Image (cartoon, rainbow, N blue to C red; front, side):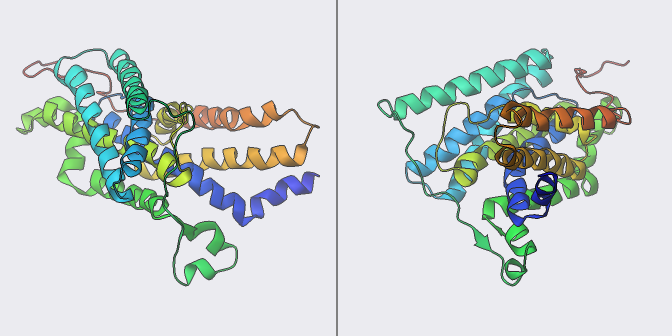
Length: 316
């Protein structure tokens, strides 16, 4: 039986499932990385993912195409990001309290809108989600083709987004401004750049990515919106940011690590049967992820201005 547990790691289905599970975490973690590099903790992530999932699915259900659903989800996420920025960036309110409030507000609005549009629905109606796109030639490679090159376009978009955010944060003036806003906003202001504006844009962009991560669940991983389907993924993304040391490329590794553990526990449950309680496997990804993050946190250097409100003209 022990050999069977190891053989899971060498199946194409395991790696394909890992990639699918990782995608919403990738979008959400990248969004949180952008927010926190600018000095703003966005605890609204769970609610923003929830309403992004609802808006993306609902827009397709009402007649929009799938790509328009992604855009609309990103737009609604950006609106909640802007609301978050008004309180935390311009008014200097507590980022923790504001974030929790945004989570509660976004989740409630999403559920309320669902009931208004579908008042008598007991089972969420299904849509036609993204279908698998087999990359020519690469998808035909034994093992690797099935594992990595037979996914939906939305899945490929997640990995393209990692590359884009890495380029944005490390090779553009905007990325440098975002990092300076989170490290030394006074120096950024001395260069004549509006710190409040940079932080606001960062929160809006980051929140849009979070909402897209939620939309992935209803438009690619599944085909309907269910209450509670985010299931703590936003909080996992918050932890993955620390594991990633606020770096986009490491955010990808962190998301794949947690997703791999999650995919493994599902298959391990089937092998173990009644020998090992299934609750053990359910908690396994979280325990191992916590251990990995504790180890990584010892070498982590967080943005110096994270959680620190900025007020023009003040000198510290």
